[in-house]
Image (cartoon, rainbow, N blue to C red; front, side, top):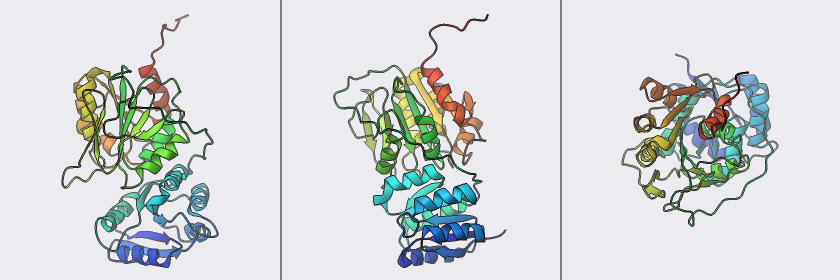
Length: 347
């Protein structure tokens, strides 16, 4: 089996040294090139054809965003953004331009270093194509939540996703109308420190308000809530959010199963569960709970998934009622929650 060919791009020699030190220890990883700015990244992508590239964002000559955009329109390849956490919103823009995932800059040893190696191995095998263009939309303001009535909605949408999830969420959520009648709660696996930036990024492309869920907040219809990565998120019987500590040894942050299972318990047949692209089995138990409670369960199809993992496992478990392509998912969800008042004429 050939080694994974990696190009490292970062304007900091120290950061490149750290990444090189971490990756050089692995027998199945070969560093084939290094760059110090976005223009060099574009050149190396064309000349070396690596299996994957790590990309910093703040760089001279050409920044990481511009480099990702150029690479994905010319010599598409898997890109893992390795960024400072204060650049979280910009990092999420990188996902919109075609990068597969974002992680924080690691130290020489420890969890972050191991996560970098694991993500490189996983993402290096992902097939990528020219990505969607950036969309110009108007930011939306957040609605007040603590003064909301106990339940101002009939149905609720709960979404589970992992690798490829931010891109899928952008394509789904940006096409939902302003009169969408249900709250949307989301558990997206993401590195600590990046969820606020992701919420801000999604808010710029959605007509619905987007925020990170806070302990004790009430749910509002037509609002999008993201689970923080540092805690697991659940919904209580009085329709408020409860932040829970992740169990020791948990590998998924936040837990999709925790959120989906709480939705099934509180809302039963009024729950709509959606499982999108991602690796592993997180979310399968929660989707099963929603189906057993009489709710509706939907999975993204294989062809439109970056990684057909979590959704495939849910389909295999018999937890899914409908498998839908990502492009059809917004319309399908709207029809599920907003059925037409009158039957169409057969004439």
